[in-house]
Length: 141
Figure (cartoon, one colour):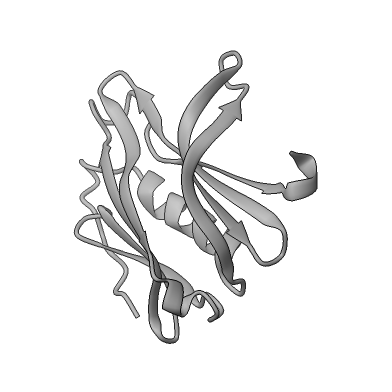
């Protein structure tokens, strides 16, 4: 549904396409029960809480897209739009437009969830960027 984007090797080292692939692996074939802004707890470099988009799927899994920032590099969710009239449809893919700043989680009827993403590789590629994506079972909470 969306043509795969190609970024310059000076802008991205493969992190953004890898992020999309990870999200695709987690959500394709499922329905979204809810999507909400929230927080995620991580143990990376010590315990801390980060801002995240939390997508709950019909299989009881929770997919967290955690914002990241490392000096001048970052990836963050600016906004998201859930189309409730399409959530009953199975997700068939994840694509991007506008240089990986608009992410589309789609079904046969169109976008189920659209994400507006801000990101920069900073001083390529010294600092880390890209969402930290984790998939958790609700029972793990």
